[in-house]
Image (cartoon, rainbow, N blue to C red; front, side, top):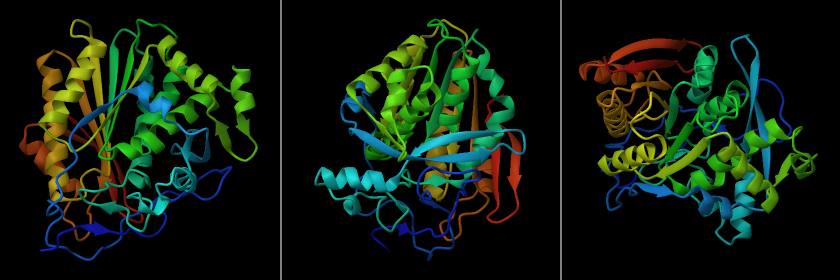
Amino acid sequence: MSGNFSFSFSGDDIEDEGGSNSAAPNVSVPVQPQPTASAFPVAGKPLLPATSHDLHNMLAQLPSKVAYGILDVDLDGVGNIQLPRRELWDVRVQLMAEDQGGDAEPGLGNHDVKTGVYEGGFKSWESSVDLVKVLSPSKDFLADESIILTLIELGCGTALPSLALFRWSLSLRTPQRNSALSIILADYNPTVLQLVTLPNFILCWALHQREELPLLENAFSSEGELELTPQVVAAFDEFLTSRGISLSFFSGAWSNEFIDLVSAKKTAITGNDTKQRTVILGAETIYSPFALNSFTQTIFSLMKQEKEQGNAAEALVGAKKLYFGVGGSLDDFVAKARELGANVEELREETEGVRRGVVRCSIP
């Protein structure tokens, strides 16, 4: 049996449908890898423990500037949304400047996934854009300020679905502190959260607010870079506080400890006495039988906790119909969810190219 499971995906997964102010993004699509005996576990390599990361500590570790590109997502002919993403070459430059070596960081070499080591978070995956397109028609739920809303993205990586919801919320929600929005972002690798996820949220905020704050206008360069001066970082932090928005970050494997950490954080932010709604998001999280089972158990545990507290909860899952050679599939997830008693509704199906779909799950 192979002691390490990895596969390289080739081809472009997400094409920039509009334009970009930077080089072509590094994105990926699964093709048929060579079969292996087992995706999990990785012999001799324990999974990363569930860990919570403090936002202010993460802000203090940001580089002095980041380079970015823009992904222009066509929303099925009904407008579009432009989502910023930090460039992977910029991540490599930062790591080399810090003497860590960009090629040594898992995910910045030739493999898109090395199971138990790196779970694909540096790349933007096709199903994450499918989730953005599904969320767009119903985004008005963000404007309901009578509830406390929690968004949880598992396996977030570049966090395109959460970025889209964050961007829409800035226009749909009025700046009232008593209308809380909690965004919980989880990725297996802590370096993904630090190097890509958090910078993408800062970029999204800065692009939205640049005309309102001269500080930001001066921080952007014509080369597609944003200077992360102490003043810019402080303005981002202050903005989140003024809008009642919390960003929480978690790394490590999905497990009971992970669920306990996320639940405790959510309760600390939102409490238990107010009307609440939780939306769980996951894109390309079920590419192997092990990942499918642990992901399914995690979202069901989170939804059951919400149901027991009288809160509304649902999960939106985007994935390939079949991950060739590794055993995961959207159909297997749907069957597993229904076996566990969930209501499952198919929201989107892509039949051109690699077949994909998006489903909604809820507990009756």
